[in-house]
Image (cartoon, rainbow, N blue to C red):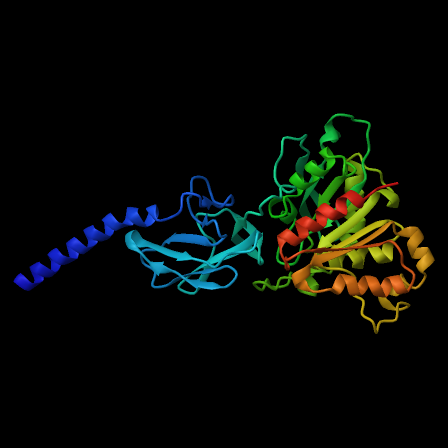
Length: 391
């Protein structure tokens, strides 16, 4: 009994000591570190360190293992009070999805807002980019993000779309505007450009600086299955199966574009209609627009340009739309292709092929030091939007 009593007293002393140490652990965190702007209200973690490393804290008292999946998988260390800690390697600036893995189950962090990415709701962290503010809120006139439900006769369902209208839209009720249709990538949806891409901040700032023509921007869910067809099973991180997009082109042409031109004060002609998209949305852009140049004059692909290789016959790819360079140059005011330098040089290579064939209206942009990620696409939009609808 004496041995058991001594053991219990020792255990009590150890627990008390650990509880006293707990405030000291927090005190060791540099005061200049900051919570991520993607944290839920009043949540101190995840916390970004001055060197752009991140400290995560997860409460999981009954878990045997807890991990963080960010740029790689990090094993967390159990601490007192049921908490788990880990400090990551320094991260590159920008918006990054992450997951908490508890006992093999990947889940969102309760301390973070969730975003639809990786084909599911996921947590994310924003690593600050010093000296850059084009995608941050400023004291400028603000446009509006509107949501509308549109019934699609092609898919047989109500579809929710997001629409950005510029600050001027509510001031002069006779003014009409050009339209950019802007698509998300695979594993994301129509919310991506608003929440992950900071589209409204980018456009408000460009318009306020006189760098972009005021325009309406329409963001639609790229997943579209014909009415009556089975919906493909969603596979994590692999939702971009061909069947899931089968009805997209018809849905855009027959339902969405007519609805926008009927409902909003648009300039409803090809000279005032553009389309762009990131990743798979870039592929959707060129699959839709190149066969329909009677409806679009401004085209853009961010990490998702037209698929052309040196061995391709330009008389056959995309139904030969590039075969007649003079006709293409007359119809298409802009062909913008961009990506991050970490992704490779595919936009440069594609542009070289097309320029050698006589296509002249190409702009190539490569985001320095970024990969297949939202900072690349924010930068692409920032470069692309000022080029649109110029006379």
